[in-house]
Length: 228
Image (cartoon, rainbow, N blue to C red; front, side, top):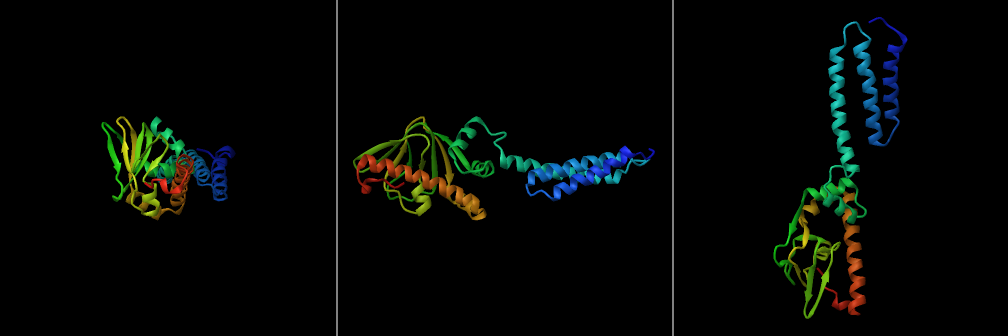
């Protein structure tokens, strides 16, 4: 194809988008700029020479594919795209978590529905799981005292955060919908990411603080608070 000014502009636009990409810190925008620049280069490699530069075209396509993979991962980390309705509802309860951090938790989560009264924790017995009440009711019993926990509460946060044994029996009532995590798997995620560690510790600390406030109001003294 004969040289013309409009065709030559393609490579200049491609270079311009690459330069802009190098000046951007945000990785999502950077990847988008690189893709835009690659598109102009592909057009140039195909339109400018008499015979398309197939080696350059193939190489650029490979780079585009790699960028698309990373771009997809970034979108998964920043959005709730493709999450199920239940998962999106659960995400709303995990204040302080990014979508990416939440997806990490989902990968190791187990959804359970109690078909009959299910014991989640026993007083003075080691607890290696962390539970979240998604729907239904959970009964906590300590001595002669008994009360209910409703959706939106964790079970096992004291054992997880402080390593203490539960001081109360915890039973999920039939029909209760729960999410369960192996505490050791969460610990491994925390070791890999300080940001994830901060998010989970802040979430569990808020949950514990709310329980303490409610227990003090109901019982009137700190000693009656069941630690689970």
